Amino acid sequence: MKKVFVAILFFLGAASLSFGQGDFLKDSLDNYIKREMNIWKIPGVAIGIVKDGKVVVLKGYGVKEIGRTEPVDENTLFQIASNTKAFTGTAIAMLDNEKRLSLDERVLKYIPWFALKDPNATEMVTVKDILCHRIGFSTFQSDFLNWNCNLTEEELIKNMRNVDAKHKLRYKYGYCNMGYVTAGAVIKAVTDTSWQDFFQHRFFDKLDMKRSSVYYSKIVSDSNAAKPYTLINGQLVRLDYANIDNIGACAGINSSASDMTHWLLMQLNNGRYNGVEVVPETVIKTTRNSYTINRESAIPSRPYNHFANYGLGWVLEDMYGSLAVSHNGGANGFVTNTTLLPELNAGFVILTNTDANWFYVALRQQLISYFAGQPYSNISAAYYKRFETNDKKDQEEIKALEDKTKSNPKLSVSNDAVAGKYKNAVYGEIEIRKTKKGLTMYFSHHPFLKGELVPTGAETLLCKFSDPTYGIHEFPLEIINGKVKSITVKVNDFVDYDPYRFEKTE
Image 1 (cartoon, rainbow, N blue to C red):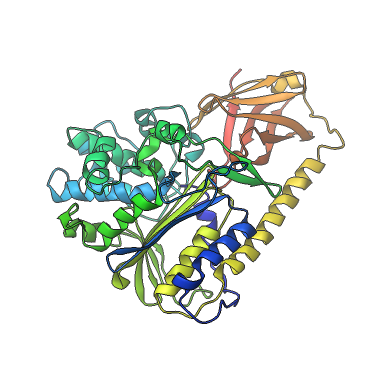
Image 2: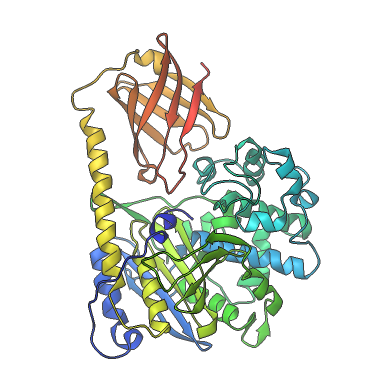
């Protein structure tokens, strides 16, 4: 769901590095993946590739956990995050086809308590709107609260009415995870079951996806599950699994490369798997209609790619003259991709267990290029060059912030004046407590998280979050007549782009 957006924005002119003549898939894929995993510092990768109705590649590479020898295999579980959205979009389209709901009907018909801050938008927003990212929210807006928090699904949906949408309804694309959380509630409202059970009975059971599930507890307890990692100062650091059961309809599926090939085969066979219709062909087509323009024109570095639109849980693009139907997923310690090339009767899934890599999108492009009959060039090398440049810039910025603390600057007010409770209309409450070391921030809806605060100036504090997913950032204080009025909190962009102003309440 998350870091993927940073990576997907870039495609670089690929540096030529030929493996020689031959078939890349048959002759070079293994060596290519192993080499690039080492360069990118990826502990484990799983990949499944289908072509002409058959699984042609299904393999794991590397290890599930650093320091142990158990290898990643085709059945190893990963959190596939926003690849879940295609399942939710397909489920809604199935219910539309069964006349149990209408994509063009208002959300209010199915969830009477649903509301956005703009009452006109509340009245008009449709089921289709919440699925194709056009309700007015900007990308990741409000996700600082939503991601890995302790609120219920219903509480999070009700909190959408507190968000000041950046755009008007249907005015502009803005990737909104809460739209899909709301879609999960719609499924529950129009069926006799939950969206979780709907997935199990209508998808996992019928597609023989025996390893797949939608609950945090399933991946935590599974003996064949990849562990999540990130990079800190060039070193891999183990993360905790994100508990996203409460937003699972947008990002909650755990799956394996093997199971996901069953999903690919069904998608590429017009909804049929092992000769049985699982999803009607008309539903498959409905999910791949372009409902929202994501990018209207070609980027100069991508002359083969002229547009990017959004359907129902799928990104739709032209690639070398063929349609590419795909989605990425990003969770704490995982980035993944699912791609369908319907006109080439090919598709693949790529699963990785570190969120600090762009290799998964480079390999996606490498495979698209291969199936489209393009000459080989090492796309991963080009991505890595840009990744290194960006990472170096990020580290320099963090070092500059940390250097500001070395002269032991003092706030213009005492720690007692800063300590207290603060509130934001969207997030809720945080608290800053005075400790022996200084000041520590606590988050009411993320009880596992805290931030150590150190002055960088008279009115600024450097925050180092206990979970590296949230980053290292400088927070400005608003001080008037010697009293603290507010603090502005920022987390990493791949969680939420927006700063949050918290007003002091006591």
